[in-house]
Length: 513
Image (cartoon, rainbow, N blue to C red):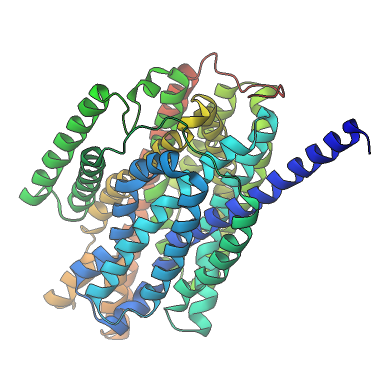
């Protein structure tokens, strides 16, 4: 065989190998995305079995996102140092093992600890996957397609989570929603050992433990303060947590600027494209997260859909996101980066504005169209911003840069649920109680829409029906107001992206080295 033929064969094997490696990476993304949404449907069953208090139930739901948000930057930087493949595979094994611990938890305290450990393992996966894509795909067009597949899988996983959860809960016990992680993890580890190449920063410097602690304390404290304020209003503990978080983050930034080899290079933010893309991610999720969270309640508690039916009703968002993610890179090159991002954000804003016409008896086509438009807009925006973030940094820093993007996502989700959630909750708590409802029952009904459904079941049929009608109407009114606010946030974000991403371009097909 000639030298040229051998070289061509090796090149073709490398090309095939990196696409197979991408398939392994999207398995990890699918796992984290499904796990983020699947627990919501299982919460009532878990509550019945473990009997947690209301505070413990909040921690079971929140501690995963608290820990994962606080550790993303640290784990992304650690992966740059010890190797992204090693980080991904070790994190995958840990994720599978801790999933078993979650499934067989026997007390609320054990469940909270297990969810926190799952957050530690989850924080190792997402930055490693994007960083490996940055190092696997040197051709910019191929990398855009790979990032599109990555983003489409994340979106699809988040939407498929409720469907999978609904199916499992109708046939098995609540722990099954965690055990589905095991076969995925097994395939990921076995195939990943063989296919994934190792990559790391060749001159990483030491891993600064104080910086790790400051980023963890700062992010967790800020997210906690936001969520607690949304749930209970301003309280001393929330203000203290916010002050501690802001101080820790300020110290973290100052320290990074003085370290010879920082955990996170703050100079990345001098790049306007990088900063604009991170800001777009944060505000997009802020505008979306709270609304999507309450839409799930609308489908089940207002329109009375079963968990599986509600999960299927949310699938248009996944279809839109997958489709848009696959063509986002082409559109950004054909038109412009800022056009793709700002256009995607504007599409979401228009879709949210349409929800201001939502009623308790609205037909599904309105919701389906809104979710499809939201998916298309998010698929365009997130895919292009991820590509911009990866392209803006040297490949040695891909893990840390990817972690910044993921942290913006987690912070945006916390802010969105807190800010838009506080609007829905504030409006809902003022709903008018019909005559004949005892005060203790009325108090339980005003805590949440789920509480109103339970309270109505214990009242005479006519009184319960009036209570439920009043609660549902007021909940939907709050949802409409939150949708309007979310729409304005997304329009402002689209305008900001249009200016911040001015002149930003994705590279063409020339090979990078």
